[in-house]
Length: 329
Image 1: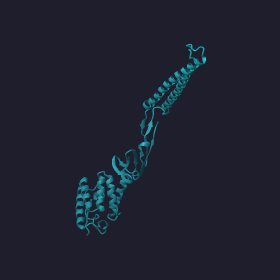
Image 2 (image 1 turned 120 degrees about the horizontal axis):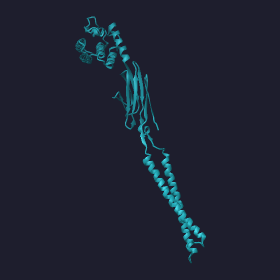
Image 3 (image 1 turned 180 degrees about the vertical axis):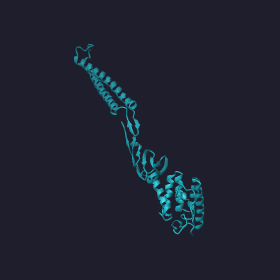
Image 4 (image 1 turned 180 degrees about the horizontal axis):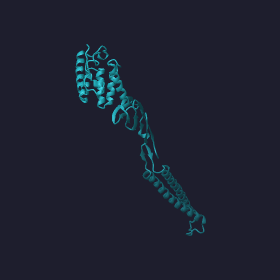
């Protein structure tokens, strides 16, 4: 059944606000690729809603017109309804939705249109192409989430492509126990920017920064421990020598000896040497222990590390952006 439906000539010329004549392209017609599977009563209901949308459009009531066109498309996805929807969305400054509607309107090329209306559709398509581009993001880490311009987009692994307005956009990748990635992408008219998101585990991304070189306190501690051990060895040697002196003293001075052992120089030297070794050993143990403790305190208190996250550098390019991590020490 052939039915003619009013199209607005304002869709052909922005200065005109009246409805088109009977010569405008019909929704029904000889070519019925877009009518397959749509019962005639449903077509008529869609045509009625389409007419009502055109009436709103003629009154510059674009928002109500969109509501009527959507209702009509829910019944019948007709290319001419999609075309009117696209033009109305352009008037409402909603180019992303308009581009999608225009693609659906042109899915049968010029078949649903008169030549002048088809050319108008191509002109609108060229206009929108300069205002829009695409962002394509891929990731292969399960559990990661991708957001675009602050809105949740998709879960990894996977690849998604979306149409966006020209300009700067932000893609964020996030996953528990991984370092988030924030990428700035610049999209120009008609271009497609691709980005592969790869997150780095926090345990490998975080670096520890120390106020002083790490070897300094541990070298001090090790040095103090070495001095203390050497002092212990000296004290043990002195103690052994003192025991030997007492044994010799008992053997050589059983009948008594002078206090200064002036007549027994060997015993006197043995005693003095043992006392000196004991004194030096104790001093070395005290000094070494204090040094070792000081090194430990230095390492644990004054040289505690700070967790440093890498700096993310983003270099904007005409077809996107390059990002990289770096650390400063």
